[in-house]
Amino acid sequence: MRFLQTEWHRHERDRNAWEIERAEMKSRIGRLEGESKTNKRLHDSLGKQIKMLESALKKEREKVKSLTKGEKVDFAKDAKELAREELKSIGKGLLLSIHARAHSSSDMS
Image 1 (tube, helix red, strand yellow):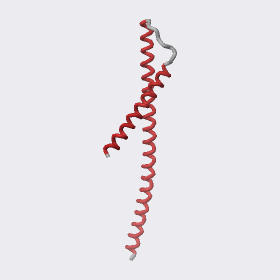
Image 2 (cartoon, rainbow, N blue to C red):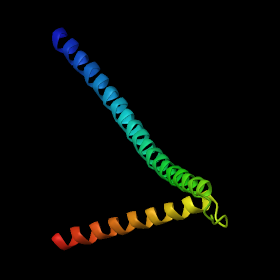
Image 3 (tube, rainbow, N blue to C red):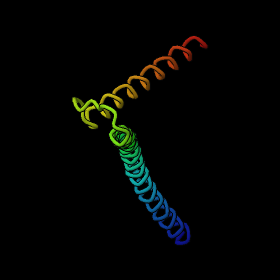
Image 4 (tube, one colour):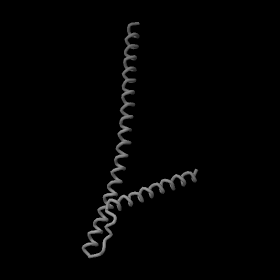
């Protein structure tokens, strides 16, 4: 009888330890998924900024090249404004491609 009692207590301790470990793992999974989503949003945001900066650099280089050739340059818009406009057009292009994919996937159904 004593043996059964000790085995039952050992089983209960093990079960409690497993439940605690399971809860800790679920918590860790939730935290890691949240970090993953945050990192993805940060990556996307930084990617957009890189595109904008590359565009501004390209426009600036074109302006310098034009000035060295003695051509007339339109100073009405600065590089930031041009980059913003290009970024907006990139964003619209992304939205259109997402929209097109959504329609093509619904057509396949």
